[in-house]
Length: 119
Image (cartoon, rainbow, N blue to C red; front, side, top):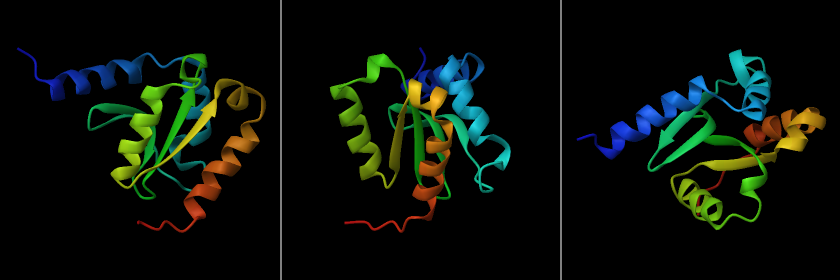
């Protein structure tokens, strides 16, 4: 029988190989340290969640959000848990990734330059 950790790892691997359109577009902006030398990993298992993109150096998670994420209580609980683990979470709607990618890039860079304080 497969453990939950194994299931999450397998699911993340499948998601890396079958990214949806806007995850691919966001990935093009973030990959290969092109963006301010930042290293992002794709589809990373964190607890019982899989984050789209994670920069561990800055404890930053970047998510591409489709229409099923609008006003989603599960996302609120997920983000709360990720923040409790010391991560900051940036979510970008698909249309912003498509039409205003320069805003996405600026927000990601700004988040890495901001001082992080833990309460």
